[in-house]
Length: 482
Image (cartoon, rainbow, N blue to C red; front, side, top):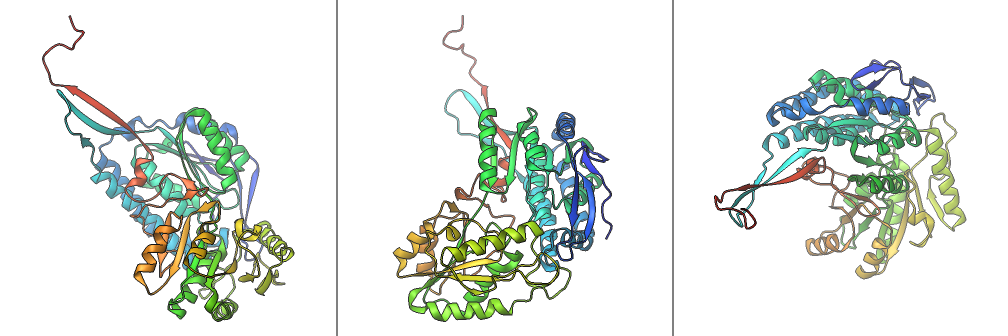
């Protein structure tokens, strides 16, 4: 694995950024992996002004698709080095970063196929005109991605934006930019015209703000916290600019009385503790039937206590370190606050003495669903057990949150599964599985969990403008003519 040099990508040119240095730390050891000088507002301005899309947008769809498919091939070629680089920069387990790299490759291939087979519409005739609906690129798109799954998040924005004929200003998180920069090299190697892509790491208050406010940027796609999403939305409203936002979550995982016990316990543990809980879709509110609460609680605590915590580079690691030491300390502080709210810690709950930004799998009980711990996103390996009496009580508690991103249901009754899936306010519902994704299936959030659609064929439409064309066929004059 080669660590990228101290360079960022500005309008297709590799150079040292004009912003402050960003220290990229391996959270398993605390060692510095690389130092990258981030972008400045001036870098953003140069990138936005240089991202001319005319030549790229003028290519026929199958010509752009060929380049995007090549990106997927190159990601696959370098898969192991990309996975290791992401593990060293984010702490994630290798089994997960390998999956994220494979997801990124699949995303570019999917949007190559979607682009090549995308159709415009000849709409039903309602008069002496031929009417058509066609699509055109927006121009320059700002893409702002989080630190928890950079390469997959990057691909889910870059691929459809480029497929649509746009240029992209990508701002990866300041703590984890390395794999985003490595991905950019492959995008250029595949043949995407250099000025179309810039990778501009740095603080959101500087780089992100400059991207969102720049007059040349016609759309922003954002994944991150709800408060930042609101700030972006306010700027977008002033610009009358479309946005796609995947925001926070406090997702319920529901165990029904008839659930297969072993499957449900394993699925719940994976849903909250994989990625060390650093996932917007983490099943952090665990609803258990009151009639079987003690049984499932004891099994979950025993299972959580057996999970293997260790460095992401170890093949048997299940719970890796958190992405940064600062975030580890934030999670620890939120668990301390939960104690103050009356939570009983069933397992975990203490920062281990070993080196690294570790926090153990933690399960809490004794809190009401209305507590801050149950209402606010922790974004760490912390789940809360909550009993429910019946289905109406369950639905009321599960929906009693400002979020609506995901939900898991464990049951052997297909009627109950369907009924609950339709009653729960969530953009994605998993039944007898959890945290499984397909690039071909749309992903969206309800309530304060987001706006717009990522993934699926619909995902490309958010990066296009739709235009209607009327072609007059009547040789007779219009009513006011001569």
